[in-house]
Image (tube, rainbow, N blue to C red; front, side, top):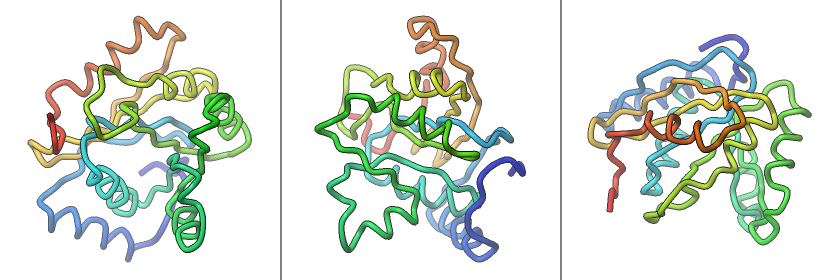
Length: 187
């Protein structure tokens, strides 16, 4: 992992994360760019197990990233744990300004990896939510793909993509990186 990436944990947490991947028969492939700021998008998102895999990968790789969670979970006894794991509270009733809020976080911080599931839910959806794209474009950071392939038991990291500002042209290119990946619950 590159020196510019925000670090988390040490040898013990890396060993635990890697051991859990081996125990479940999964592997991590690909590479992460050596950049201190990026939007990570994970798909296909079909199960709560995607979160478990994400946390295991974070520890196995020794990288700190943040993710958005509904604000109602940020109370005792979960608030401290969610903060430690990288959770950023979001009031889902007031999502107006979400892109601007996250872009401001990128501006405020020296290092910030923001993980987002573009499908927005584990249920089957007709299309992706596009907030991740606008956050990356506004913050002028790359989008990095994280592919959950339950068929191959592989969490593939990369490649990166720099948004041009033309969502209509860019979105099919981004989604093509996930073609063929099998979610845990494809239906």
